[in-house]
Structures are given as structure tokens and as C-alpha cells.
Length: 297
Image 1 (cartoon, rainbow, N blue to C red):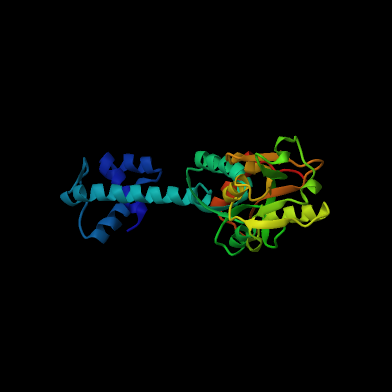
Image 2 (image 1 turned 90 degrees about the vertical axis):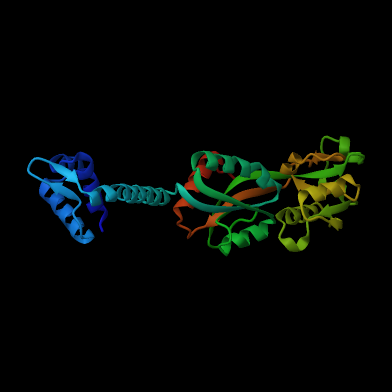
């Protein structure tokens, strides 16, 4: 049973005139009459009583009309859904995020996607460390991610934020009232840091920066996330090198002090698989390009 036959039947049933129905369908009358005959043959019953002066629905035709309309309406919905999916207007995109830098950029993107692509199911996953997030994009567990890791083979990406390092200190620390502090002046401090085995780019950048300043940081305690890290700082366990985005976390007893000179900077990138040709992903990336302009450098 072909959809065009159903459409022809509905047109004739509503017009009760083969000529007007054919004009409505933008076809000539003989093909329409042939479609109705084929449909009646397939159903094994007449759908219309025809005479030279009138066309009337049979009882079978009246019973067939509403189901035929429903089939055509469902087919129209299916067609619109397929077209929307092909344009990337519907679908599912999973976004992973890592670190506090994501907390600044991610809401901008998620709000824009929700407003402009309401048919996209935007699934958020995290928080992870940057190394973990990249691994999940590579293996296909995630479609897209904010991460501080870049330059991975098979991934495309662009930098969307630069986060300078700062030092978080207890509010009773001598540096708490200073406008800035030299990194070398922290050589004798106890540090709290993210775990070394989880692929934290903040920890790696902090370590490289301390070594460049002439000392190896003495890490006395590790914390799994930024809030826990800052809670340890507030408790006086040590100081912590964190990215500027960590200032978005308000915690009593913690003061953020800028590093003197040109502080080390952690770039935050949006990355995805270069081979992924999902229309939904491409639509999200178009939104991201507009609301998260590429950061130079």
C-alpha cells in the first residue's frame, strides 16, 4: 500500500470530485483514477460509489478515511524528523568537562544549544580530569569535551579560554593581603594538589612552573576536585596553585592571590573526533563557534 495511493484516496474523499482532487494533488485525473482502482483492488473492496454525476464514499471508504489520514500524518512526522536529523536539529550529543575552567565556558554553550537546537539532547558528563576526558572522546564514550589537553592525534579542537595560574592561600596567610606573590616565594610552603595519577593538567602546569622558579613543590595532601582542594587550603593544610576560574567557587577562609609577572597560563580547548560526521555534533559546533570564539595564542 503506497502513501501516494492513500493521499489520492484522502483527496478524493474530501473533495468528492476526481477533477478537483487531481488539481489539488497537481496531477492529471487519469493517474489518480488508476491509483484509486489499484488501492481498491489491494483492499478487495470499493471505496467510492461513482456515477457520471457524483462521487460518494462507500461504507468501507468511510471506515478507511480516518486511518488513512493517520498514516499520512505519521508519515509526514517521520519525514520531518528525518530532515531535521539530517540538518542536525535533532539527535544526541554528549559533552564532557574537566576542571573549573569548564565551569565558565560550559554554561555558555549549554544555554545556547538549548535555545537554538531544542531537538538536541545535550548530555553532560563529568567532571573528569583532562586526561580522562580526552580518552573518552578518543574511544567514543564522549562526542565533545572541554579539556586542557590538546594536540591529540585524531582529534580536532580549538582553544576557547586561557586560565592563568593563581595561588590560593588561607586567609590568615602572610600573602593573603598582598596584591601579588612571586612563585619563587612559595618554595618553602606546603602544597595541596590534585592526584598525580589522574591526568590533571593543572597539577602538571603547576609542577613545571615551580621547577622553572627553582624549586620542587612539597605536596603534603591531594584532593580529588577543586572544592575539596580549596577546603584543604581553608583548613590550613597548605597552599594550592589553581586556575583563575577557581575563583568562581566561594569558600570562607580562602584568598586568591595573582602570581607576579607573566603567570603560567592553562589553555582550555573544545575537542572532538575529526572523523565524526554526525549532523547533530556539527550543529552544536556551529553554535559553539559563535558563542565561544576561538582564543588566540
